[in-house]
Length: 445
Image (cartoon, rainbow, N blue to C red):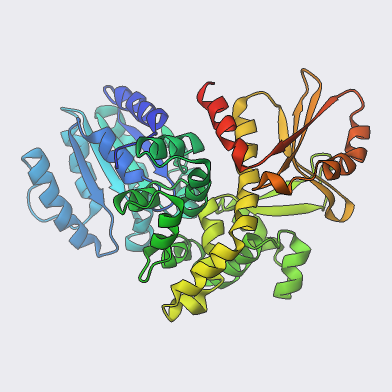
């Protein structure tokens, strides 16, 4: 699969690299595994003199032996003698870069916390003393979000404030999914929605479907739920290192949110204990969930729901984790049946999220969200405000148009309309059939 999207990220890296003509620069790239960090870095570096070091979890001495070979091969010279400390290799590279510009990539940088925790203080001292005398563009990347965020964003850490650029790579936007499917002659609204749910726009998962000729909805389902599927353990691979010994509690909370238990009281009643601290960390430290309130809620309102930010994680927790007993005995066919049976409801929720993104990206509205009244009654799928024009959009969103009940939306909106008497109210009714129109609107922006 060719290299898609990431043009703004490439431009940002090029801007910092240009600055490295005069003084060393530090770029930080974070993002979960499979999100395309390495592909981005390699694309950026392909026409530049560069070194790529992957920080695997082995002894520092063995890492240095490995990196010395790379240096000799790439630069035609290397430090003399055996070096056992990574900081000494970096010291030599700063000296090399005093004569010519060099890109140095340190991939899975957070692994150094396990290998040599003192490295970061040594690196700070070396950086502060040598950056002005060299042309080294160091790019560090890492897939454990919480650790990378702590290393560079916590003011108590040695590397705080040293980065010239911090990129947090996200999944592909919906327009990129549309582009991929269109180029492969697989585009339909149904395929787009299924691809969005099953891959979450994560480049590696899209590449797997592309490689296996499975971009069409039914083929994608067959591939993802096949025996020995790589998808069955993906959620664990992505998050278990983030959560460490508390992963069981976090996984239980995420499973409940994924299957529709989205309020704290619901979660606590099932888990039989307080989860406030876990919810806060899932939001603040791990960037996996977000709280949301009714659009008319007062600041600090306790009427809060939670949503998983990424479609793929919601899909994985709702099926592969929920039915883990079946996957452990290789009965993936059972999980596939559960997915197909519940697909209309699950896909309907993510269709709502897709339309909300389309409205948000249109740039027309200053506030977009959902609405409900006390006890989560009279919920309206999408509410969009245009304060400048004093317009209020109220939308009902269903997977199939035949399931839309226009009178229900009118009834649910009575109280909300009274709250905004100066606004012109417009009712809209969206289904999967209308997704093409929304995508076309964004394409023409």
